[in-house]
Amino acid sequence: MPTAVGGMPDTSSMAYDEELANRLRETVQGAQGLTEKRMFGGLAFLINGNMAVSASSKGGLLLRVDPAETDALITEPHAERFRMRGREMDGWLRIDAQAIDTDDEFERWVSRGVTYAQSLPPK
Image (tube, rainbow, N blue to C red; front, side, top):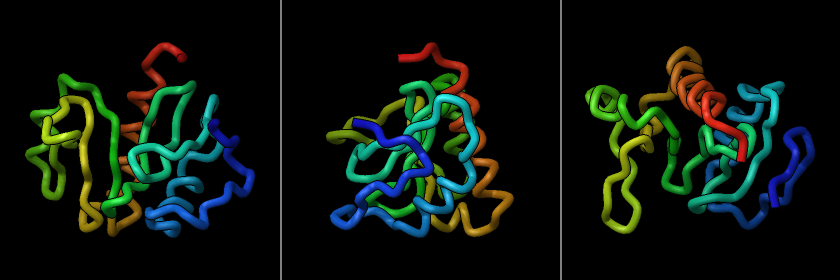
């Protein structure tokens, strides 16, 4: 069950970077329809039920993007298609921690995920 952002969810048994999750929480706060939920071993931030971005259990971000933009986005350093059970998924990216060291880069990637999630119909 999603937890409204702003509350203090129990994250004691999570395997993701809590500092990164807090950084995400601060960046996306105020987005309409925002919830957070454990997904893919990390902590995901959803907009109207659609995942936008997650603090990945493998470090860095898991990001939802327009599938048509996947090929162009994976040409950027430290960005690759997300793989689930060995299958690459268009519209889902893993962004390594090195790509989000600066606030500008972090906000650019997070904004891309939030913008795409906002474009989808509510679930």
